[in-house]
Length: 261
Ligand SMILES: Nc1ncnc2c1ncn2[C@@H]1O[C@H](COP(=O)(O)OP(=O)(O)OP(=O)(O)O)[C@@H](O)[C@H]1O
Ligand SMILES: [Mg+2]
Image (cartoon, rainbow, N blue to C red):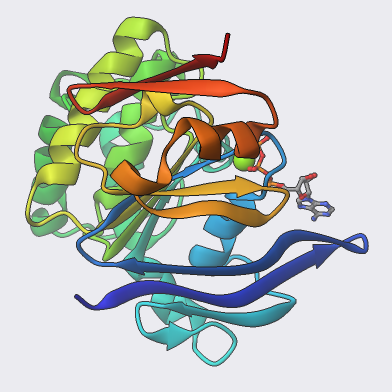
């Protein structure tokens, strides 16, 4: 399977500290990764590398076959979908849901005289239906619930049919029902054959959707464990990642973790 992401001995140094510390990591196009770790572990930083927003201090990052630093990031970026709350804050509150998704076709936020093709509009409507947003197409973004806003962000990030999809805490701040609804949608999407490689960041094993295949456990910018979920996600690896004794349980492809007694 073709490699979508390749991190080789990657270091990101900020204020004399290695916030990504000699990381090796490979993602191929049939894999769906969860990146798990405590606050400040470096999760968002590695998504920023994968989205070409920052460069490594040393080491090599190769994205969709292009080496970061030796390629035009403006050609690479449209091939990558990225949804995060930082990006959501840039969406104007008065923008309609349809426009939030449609404007992704032009890599802009805020509709401004772009000449949209019918084909883009049809695709946007199809993506909205897939993420159960069709009833909300004419609503303004600012009037949506958190759960609805999260689904719109994901719909926007897949509008351009990316080859790599990056999601930074897509289920953060959702109530139990909204979280489970979104996890069901994400799980269905992850298992569809046409879905691109995915990397999803979360703090909680409870938020790993069914259908995700691999996990990277990060602590202080270092990989504690990395590989297929069945091998890499264990009570021991979680204990080391979060620095407190943890037991892990699995039921029907979903996980729960709690402090070890
Ligand atoms: N530009 C910067 N300058 C200095 N420190 C930075 C910079 N960017 C990130 N950091 C630090 O690097 C560490 C990793 O940050 P990052 O945002 O990747 O963590 P995270 O794993 O996403 O955390 P969270 O779960 O809280 O979102 C943090 O300690 C953060 O304060
Ligand atoms: Mg983060």
